[in-house]
Image 1 (cartoon, protein in one colour):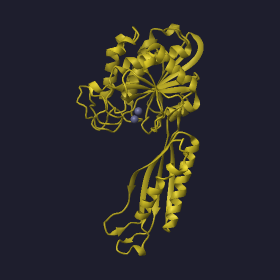
Image 2 (cartoon, protein in one colour):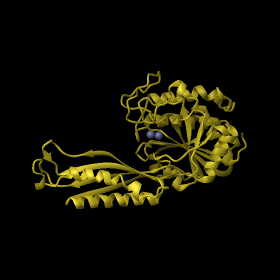
Image 3 (cartoon, rainbow, N blue to C red):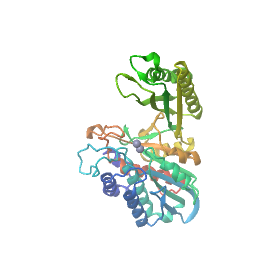
Image 4 (cartoon, rainbow, N blue to C red):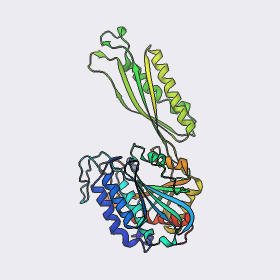
Length: 397
Ligand SMILES: [Zn+2]
Ligand SMILES: [Zn+2]
């Protein structure tokens, strides 16, 4: 296997152990802020490796710290631990044992990889100049566990100078490392609109104010905002994911509710989209003589890599794994709470390819058939080890 040739001799024998860790977590998925067993497994290993361990951040978060013999910079690496409310459909020996819960985003692999890096450095503590911090956070899937970790001081004591995180990528072939130079993922916000009309008999629309027809106009108008109000060279998405209202075929309801998401890569576009959705809603409501409510909930911010740090990741990959493995990626309009760490300290978020068509590993994130090519586990360890070595200038490699 080509990938195997790129893995360091110290990491190769770790493979079975990495698989076991990943599969154990995969069989016992836990949702956001409930990662009790996963968190226990993580802290037990960190203790075995002889690191300083902090537990209970953001409920189930765990931090491992290696304080080097000599002072220097502090680098942090981060994994998320939560699973999703998905019923696994994979027929594998290590399939989820918990009905309705599944590691369908690969966070089980993220945890295994970070523990692999911890295992690697456990026998090299004396050679570390500076500090290494392992951050295992809860609730990436919408819960904003990363935000809570930052608020609870995970980037302090010792103060983190740079942070790196990775996510597996089912669209990238295994062996490839995806790099975002600057913007990686979008700001992911949510809006709720209520069109408030006046209910009545469906046969006498003139005696009521029909919020359904208003909602219809609103949907088409909202979808012209990105095309007409946003600079074509910027990016934005508005999608309405749910509309509800009404009770019967012959009744005009009082209200309709629309739920949607807004994605953007800059705060300028983010604010423009928010303002325009409300203006359009107001205009449509007024034209039908009805009232409206507009709520906008800010979600994860834009994930912005530091240019130097993304270069460092690309370099670490080119030198160790091969130039051909580097894949420069366009930003994705998905969201990622790693963005909260990057708001505070420079760093980079990158992707680890897991796609393998020959093995049938082709399914998207959050699919009940999602899986990873486990060759990514030692490769992920290799990447983080190289990033740490390069950032702290350890020259272990
Ligand atoms: Zn996910
Ligand atoms: Zn994820």
